[in-house]
Amino acid sequence: MAQGKGFGKAILFGEHFVVEGNHGIVSALDLATIAEVGRISGSEIKVNDRREGSKGYSESKLAQQKESMERTMNFLGLDAKENAVEITLSGNLPGFSGIGASAASCVAIVRALNGEFGLQLSDEKINAAAFEAEKAYQGKPSGIDNTAATYGGLLWYKKGDPPAIERMRIREPVEIVMGNTGLVADTAKVVLDVVERKKANPEKYNPIYENAEKLASEARKALEEFDLGKVGKLMDENHKLLQEIDVSCRELNDLVETAKKHGALGAKLTGGGRGGCMIALTPGKELQERVAKAMEGAGFAVLRTKIGV
Ligand code: PMV
Image (cartoon, rainbow, N blue to C red; front, side, top):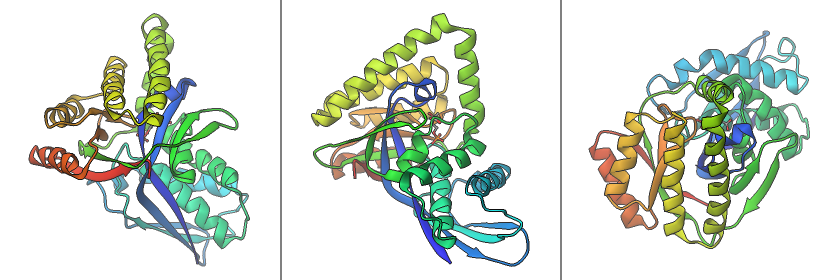
C-alpha cells in the first residue's frame, strides 16, 4: 500500500490563454488530494472516490476518470491486467470545477503508483505522467494544472515539451476566497470551443490574447513587488478578457460583483469557466471573512484559503 499527494490550484492569470502558448500564473493551494493505492486480485482498476465535492462532480467525471487511469497505467508501462489495483481518493481538496481537482487526483495517483511499484520517478516524470492523465479530463490541456499539483508554490508557466516553469516569490501568503457556482463544467468542451472560435475568428481573438500576455507580465511584476492593489486591478482586467472570449457565466459574474462590492481588491473567474469557481483577492483575515460571508449569504459554497503558501 502506498500514498501520494497532489495540490489543488488557483489560476491567478492566463487560463485559456495558456492553452495557445501564453504565460500563466498559478498558485498551488494548501488543500490537496490524497491517493492510496493497494494491489488487489483480478484484472481491474477499482476507484473509491471519498473526496467531498459538488453534488454530481464525481459521478459526471466517471468515464473521464476511467480513461485517465488507463492513460496513466500505459504511460508508466504498467499492464492493468497484470497489476490490478484499488485506488482510494480522499484529502481536503473538494471536487469543485476550477480548482484543479482532476489534476490533483492525477498527480496523487501517479505518486502513489510510483511508491507502490518502486518506479523511482523524478518530479519531472511524475508531472509528465499526470499531464498524460489530464488529457482524459481536459482534452487539450496546457499542463498548468498538473504542474501546480506536482510542484506546489507560485509558478510562472508556459506550455511546451518540456514546459517552461519558473518559481515566483512573494513576500508572504495572501488570503483569497474562492466562490463555487455549484455548476460542474466540462473543461475539455469549453477549452475546445475556445480554441475553435479563435481559429475561426483570429481578428477578434488575437488582440485579446496579446492583451492577456501583457497583463500576465504586469501581474508577475506586481506580485513580486507585493503591490496587491495593482494585482487586484489586473485580476479585474483578466476577468473582462475572459468575458470577451465567452467563458464566464451569470453566476460567475454575480460572484465577482459580490466580492468587489464587499471590498475584494480584485476578482475573476478561475480555471475553465462556464461554471466552476471564481477567485477574490482579500488580504487579511477580516476582509477574507467579510467577502466569504457575503458570498455564502448569496447562497454559494466558498473556500477560505491562501495563495503563495
Ligand atoms: O477548470 P480547471 O481547473 O480544470 O482549469 C482549466 C485551465 C485551462 O486554462 C482552461 C485549461 C488548461 O489546460 O490550461
